[in-house]
Image (tube, rainbow, N blue to C red; front, side, top):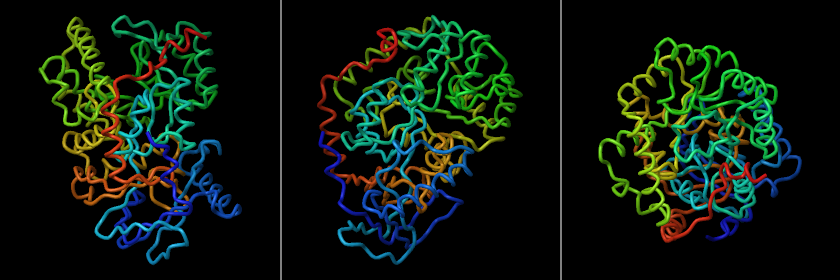
Length: 461
């Protein structure tokens, strides 16, 4: 792949005459211009003022400051208004008849291989919430930030923490059996600079309570698959932060009402919930996926192998869920809360990195009854707030990170128009559609990928 730094202009980029979908208080700005500039090219006092204003807004939005300057942006939005004139050296993009909106945020990914970066960008995804992180993920975040690798901004949990669960095939999660295990896992997460924790539901109750209290002490919000060992009310009282997957919601309506009213975030990942009935019971084939040929050849082979392992495990357990029940639970949650996140759970077999988020947004509209605007908010401003990045990402406003996508059609009128991407800007780097399409063709030719460390990293320490 090319060094993405080659795509950076010396000065700024000026988008002219766009219809701007700000994702900020329902504002749509017509015939508007948006300028982005690199922070190193701004006067020091101007750059400092922008960053200070962002921090103040972040405190108002989330109650805490955003990540420190080492994770700060290379470029920001400096002006949003009509009639802007280009500065010397600016790249000017004519947006007449086009729609400019914040870059998408995929709120549930497993960004375990470098190739995924281009696929995510090609789908307009400029930030991700990675749901299992090790040293390789911290290193990947650094390389993207320094322009050494094309890809979106990464915010990550640490490893997945769980108790003993023999039903998980090829389980390499971090098993928490004691208070000491919990302390070690939290220390590992913080050493890598991760600001969130993810749990699976089988941790023993007394250890789970201890883990939750320790995470609260360290300001590490806990997300995951909810609980098998303590009540949902107690889980809320302990400060649980986000439920991953509609299939993880409680089975009892009163418990769903409890957690939704408690302010819990919820990421349905409807598409991945449907992979179980689709590929295990209903005969759907991975090879028939629309973007199957965009995957590296070696990933296609691994998916086919892994899908057989997963399917055999579910068949032995006799797990055959009614997807309508899962949808109804999600819809009940949404009766009491707008804290909904769009997440794909790529690259689970059947969930194509990047492009599956478009499918997820369609399902939020068609199955869960969201409006197109609500679905877009679930992939922009809302996940930014959940990730405690509300002062930086998810909206178009002065001082926000330079993460934008330009569309030829209006996704507010039809959510399927989210696929009409013309240009992607991630942290001030402009990626043309031609560049991304060429890189996607190169990705398909990959025949070998390095092994992801996963749970092995802890065992070798």
